[in-house]
Amino acid sequence: MSNRPTQPRESICPYCGVGCGITYNPDSGKATGWKGPVNTRGEICPKGAAAWEIVDHEDRLTTPLVRDGETFVPVSWETALEEVTEAFSEIVETDGPDALGFFASSNCTNEENYVLQKLARALGTNNVDNCARLCHSSTVAAMGERFGAGAMTNTLDDLREADAYLVAGANPAEQHPIIFRSYLLPAVRDGTELIHVDPRENDTTKAATHHLPVKPGFDIPLLNAVAKVILEEGLTDESFLETRVEGLDAFVEFLEGVVVDDTPGWRASTPTTSGRPPARTPRPTGRRFSPGWG
Image (tube, rainbow, N blue to C red; front, side, top):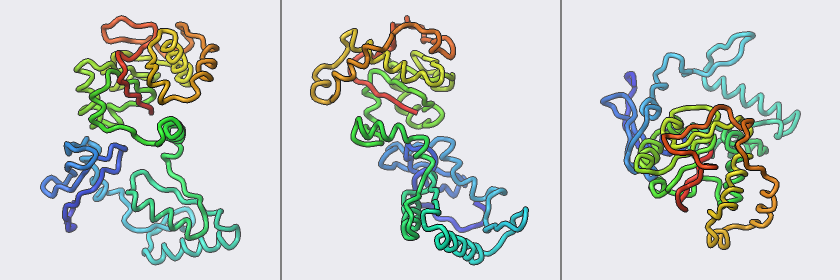
């Protein structure tokens, strides 16, 4: 990285949520992996390898800019911070602290986001947001209610134990390439079924046993239909339902109104299968099952 002094330190890749360990390689000028607590193999993908290219990029801002009419002009850090302080103070005095809002970043470390929210609360507001709240608000709420935690509930090694993957609305081959190529894809090659529910075809679809190209908005009707077929065909794990599931009777009653048929209106295109006869609905070949949500 240019002529600035550098010293490698172990850190975490700021891109996707896998949590791979990265560190600076002074010989190549790029990032390299280290065997972290999540990705114990020390692998990184092209995004991680390019993590520090932005440091010396010609378009990177290295000096604060303030608006001057229709343009922005560079100023010192002291001047920029004074302007922010004066503006925030005026807003709080005029409209109260809740007129302020702070937007955190998924590309920052936990410590950086922690400091930002502490600043917000020191100024008297809880208006702290993050892009992940929008794109993952539904999954976090659903997983928190169903599984007790709005986050990954298994280890990466557990993925190799599944007999089937149901990937709905996600593209792990491109979005989480380390998990996909090191864990999911080897399992698929060893016989694990991969059912991909997505209106589009992408790199994940290429490895899928079945592709269900539902129209946008039809993923919930599809999953309801799958649940009904599981019950109708006696594919449920009764001991699991008895010990782990609440509200089953109400759910079964709800499913009575679900119509299971080959409705063309659900499809964005024709479903595909990798040389295997399509079933009435795709279903896991056994009890070990890893769902994936986008």
